[in-house]
Image (tube, rainbow, N blue to C red; front, side, top):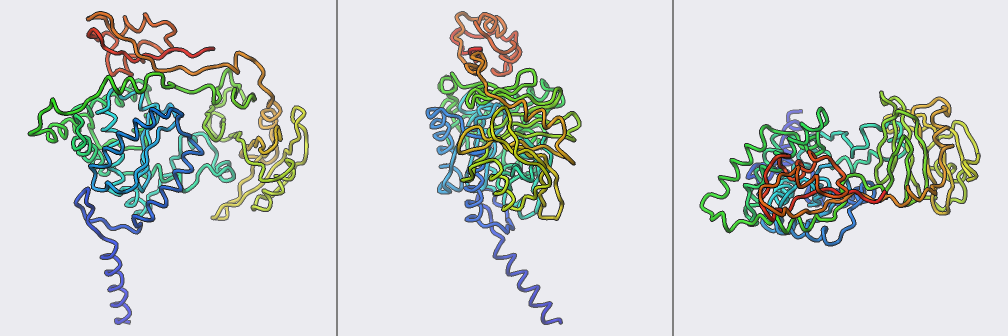
Length: 482
């Protein structure tokens, strides 16, 4: 017995030594059960899910610019040959995140808040710091996966996630529960990389100042960046101190800020929700691209994502989701339900019907999770065109309830030109004509201003009464065609 115990201890020590290495970015010894090649593979798989569920912003010039900044930062990290990838996510949420293996994402929402290239470098450098410090691998090793989700989780029933696949393991990688120590380390690395890349790190604290203002403006709501990046303390103060240390001995005049170039790159960018990808108005969801509309129950919370439209009642005890799914080579809704049965979904009731003239299957199904838990769901599958189906899911149910059925029956074609031609609001630049004009004064003179003056001030990280120099490019938001 002593021999076997000794051998086990020796094997454990050997395994620990083989798995423990010094991280070149942090200088720390790290014990990890996840190899670098495994991180790269997981990142690549999860990247596909990000593209499918969130989508990338369609502006090649902006994407190329963000990639250029990201690659320059990557070249001065301790992992320049990692095989980095950079994307602009088509989301109005103020956020940035990273996947293992060098996948870095910034939303158009955070691009609207950032005011120069040096600040962008700070945001992206922070995310690259999470990658080089291998924070995801650490958290996976510690088994601290957090089920935060992509913003849809807040109003989606677990039962719906079970069949809809919204809680894929790959997507959970985006929201590993980084510790405050991880965040402090990523802040330090972000300042390091931005400075090495030639940017002025003294611009970075302003980003955290803006995020703090956003949180204060929205009351109890926490911006997505702060929700997924726990605040280790006074970030603005900490990064200011780090920046001063980083530029010691450098000529500040040689450091890049690039305010005008950055603002030019984001001029014309969509701001807020893009109605062309669907929008809510008085409880009705309209999708100009797919030309359909559907009415969800009155008073329910609603959310539109690239992959699904979701609604839930006030206490989140009931939820309905609509998504477009592949027909899986089936010829009818009932055949599709049979295909679901082959995948392990149990039909507990229902049959073929018609929804506003289209072939449909409406009923209830049950699924079983890996832990043996059974979920009961209302299911409706509508065939509006070939190749795909419109799938409604409702939870929890014992039978098809009236709210679910009413929602399904409200599904119809969209023909109203005013809804079909709805255009998004966009970031525009206004040049200040004379020195001393205030943010409020300039903004109020903008034709078609789409947001309050206070929001214009926030986007520029200024106050409404802040005086502006002549020639200053003020970011404003102009209204799209209604």
